[in-house]
Image (cartoon, rainbow, N blue to C red; front, side, top):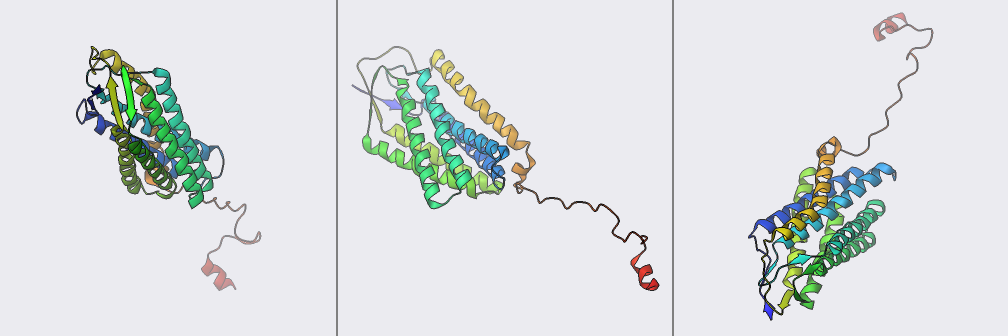
Length: 278
C-alpha cells in the first residue's frame, strides 16, 4: 500500500537549515573564485578554485542531506546505506569541481558555460538520486518520471547560473545576493525531486523517525562536509582581498633608483639654486 510521506517531519527547521547551508557553500565558492580571477595558472589559482569547488559541492550536498533528515514515511523506519551516502558526496564535489575548473580556466563563453552547466547539473541530479538509493524504507520507492525530468532541468539551469556567477560577480554584496538566489535554486531542485517520490510498504514497521541511531548516523555523515565549510569560511574571512573585493593582482613595483638622480658631479641643490647659477 502507498504510505504517507512528509518532507517536514521537524517542521521548518530542516528546510531553513538546509537553505542556509546551500547559501553558505555558494557565497564561499563565489568569493574563492573571485580570488582566483586575474591570477596565472599557478598553484594559487588552482588552490582557490579547488577550495571554491569543495565549498560549493559540500554546500549542495549538505543542503540535500539536511533536508533528508526531515523526510519521513508513515509506518516505516528510514535508514541509510553509509557507502552510497559517502559516494554521493564524492560525486557532488567531483562534478562541481569539473564545472568550476572548466569555467575558471576557459572562461564563461557560451559553449564553455553551457558544457560546464550541463555537466555539473546532471552530476548534481545524479548525486541526489544516488543519495535516494541509499535510503531504505522497508518498502518500494517509486518516482514520477515527469517530475524527475523537471528536477534535472532545474539542476542544469541552477548549475549554469552558479558557474556564470562564479566568474562574473566580484562585489561582496552582489556575491551575497547571488548566493541567496543560488541557495533557493538548489533547494527548489531538491524538493522538486522529492515531490516525485512515493513509497509503497508491505507492512507497518515499529520505530520512529526520531530514532537515536538514525540521528546519530546523520550527524556523523554531516560532520565532514560541515567542517570543510567552516574551514573554508575561516580561510575566506581572514583573506583581506576576498573580503574587500580587491583585485587579485598588483602591479609590479617600480625598482628604486640605484644612484642619485643628479649627475655624478652635481650636488643635491634646489631647483631655484640651479636656475640662478645658470
